[in-house]
Image (cartoon, rainbow, N blue to C red; front, top):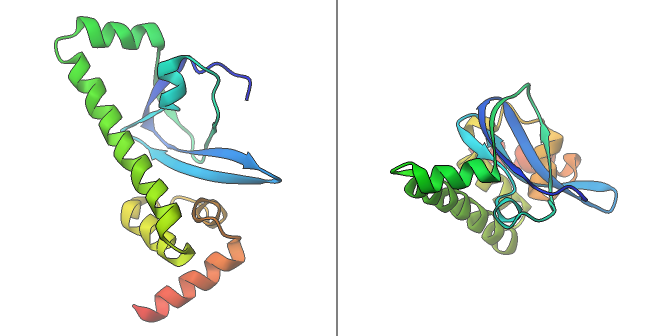
Amino acid sequence: MDTLNKRVGFLVKGLVYYYVIKGDDESITDFTKEGEFVSEYHTFINQTKATQSIKAIEDCTFLVMDYNAIQRLYNEIKEGNKFGRMVLEHRFGIVVNQLLSLYMHNPEERYSFFIKNYPDLVQRVPQYLIAAFIGVKPQSLSRIRKRLFKHH
């Protein structure tokens, strides 16, 4: 990635995923749907080069703000700082839960984590992207889904 992260978007409509390239594969790090903010926050806040890429899964509509506009929001609007803090706290919780899941759970448990934390995305996200998110090949995800289906 050689692109400086200069913008944050609010996803009005659609669905995106974040990824990094690992070898020949995309490793999916997160999904964002309508009603949420889209940005790699740590590089946006520090105005550094992006480390992840973002791709649309569905057609999307965004409201986009640059760094200076966000700073004005924080400084000039009465509840701007509170709003920014709430967004970052929400994102921080998601990132911590995903990181802990990577270290604490096997692929089957990570799939259960995905279903629990993204129940509305199970039908919207292609299976190969879910497989990449939990760190398995699509064939392994099929076996995991079969095993879980038998238990329920």
